[in-house]
Length: 345
Ligand SMILES: Cc1cc2nc3c(=O)[nH]c(=O)nc-3n(C[C@H](O)[C@H](O)[C@H](O)COP(=O)(O)OP(=O)(O)OC[C@H]3O[C@@H](n4cnc5c(N)ncnc54)[C@H](O)[C@@H]3O)c2cc1C
Figure: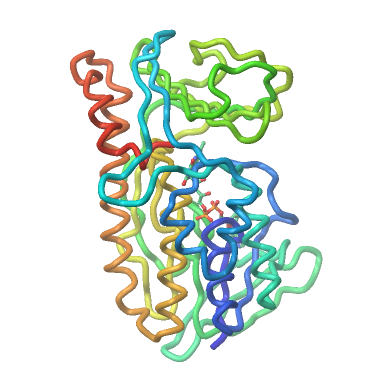
């Protein structure tokens, strides 16, 4: 069996690792010329660690990441409460914090250990399938186009997925109004270097701070300037990168057409509230890889769409409560987060 994975970020790399680990010939391609050093996701959920255990990736992540056992909840400058990440009845009490580019480095190392490789600078342009194989047209920069055949193709190529477009799968949903922002900063002083912090500020805005490493933090806000939205003191010495982004809530109408599958952001996208996007992609990829190995790929779409629907529903519910301009609804933040504390970044 020969599989092409399009996209070499958390979802595609996980699919590559899990297939290569089980002896499948897999090629992972990405149109970028090199690995990204820009991290979006920070929180790695215990389920992702469990799924990446067999490959040895979990041990690598645990050796570098920081275990966060709780989140602090603020209303402007007032600390309201400390929310533990414990799941009742389960032996889960932490979220692992690690910059996404580091998570991807460990996945790539594992892929190479199992004999796979990421081909950077290789873009999928077109895709056609028969009931026996999938034929793809690839563009290697400054080289001739190549047409190659695979048994299966996995589209892990993000929200603007070419694979999804090529097989004509709709991506219904809606776009949230306004812009959110992100800043990756070095700071000499921050109140909670060992916890995630969520600050509710005026007009329904929220700022979230996640420690990345010693004196390095990720700030995400529901307004266009992340640092300006943060109501607490942070002594920033360097802004490594800052930017604004918009949010869409969407899900592919199916995750499979014939021999072509979608996983990760190519299949679903939602707000960063709950920090589930990357984790959902890792779970899609692990499930799909196992199904391709077992020959049960047909059940993938139904199973993972149900999981995606549930997570997106929870994330949206939490986003609406946390960012509500209605003070009565906002009062539900503590209860919402307490119920979903293991989902919170
Ligand atoms: C601000 C922010 C914070 C977030 N925080 C968290 C968090 O704490 N926890 C969490 O779980 N999630 C978080 N997320 C979500 C998470 O970052 C994404 O869900 C995750 O990156 C999706 O990974 P992916 O591999 O599916 O897709 P992507 O990361 O979008 O990667 C797709 C890859 O495909 C490549 N590609 C695209 N088209 C082609 C083509 N035609 N040919 C070849 N290659 C192609 C691209 O170059 C890219 O490298 C956050 C998101 C944002 C925006």
